[in-house]
Image (cartoon, rainbow, N blue to C red):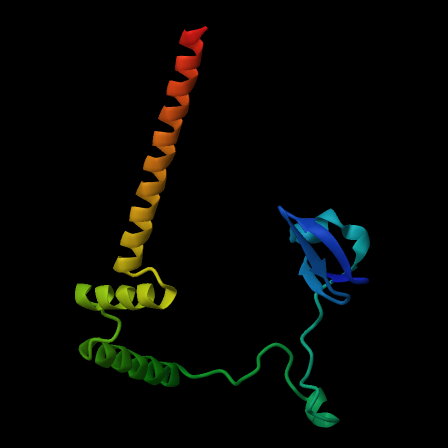
Length: 154
């Protein structure tokens, strides 16, 4: 089952505001389709359509349902055997193995360089943050000492 938008509109979807275009299709289980049914036309799922590039008898003679002839068990067996051989060869060549820790470290250091979060920058930012926190604490202690002095002088 499908809902098709009658017109373009905006609506709430969770915490976001989204835009639905005219003619956009949504499944009948979609939250937006259920929340805004007046914005949609309801249609049963369309039957499979023939290829529009085919003309005349060729389009009408296409079998409904299956798109290719059925394979024999021998053909299926040959295909599966070839696929298993290919997978075994990939496994022997090391395809799909996880990268070594050195390769992972190299990858992440490259990422850090690209986005500007290398060890030097992290250390500088960390030092700057510590300096800021210490200066803020010192200022707070001075302020409290002045308030306490003023209170005692009363």
